[in-house]
Image (cartoon, rainbow, N blue to C red; front, side):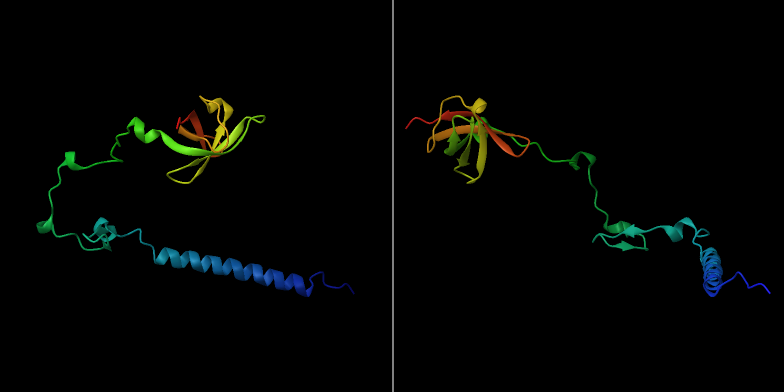
Length: 151
């Protein structure tokens, strides 16, 4: 007499598969029954009140403010730059002549800024007071147009 090829675990897996398929079918029917597709435009509309809250009631037009299109400002207002703002003062904290680079400590922000020998206009040493401009480099700010301040 032959044994059944179905084991207990095979039967359990088949039961789980059928149960999962049944649950999926029930969820699909439930979604169909509770569908919002039949709503009218007015039922789907949402409004924002003067405080920025979302509401289902339309706003009151009696309190509406008139705004001229030319008063609307998009973006950031242009800032006036003067050449004096670009030139910064600092002290050379480290400079290696053989390697060709060093660091300047900005006197205003106390930030350490990298300087390469190509950015120098005058030869500098450590503890020299300098004026410089900055540009954005790969790893941060770089000092350029570095001039030694004569005391």
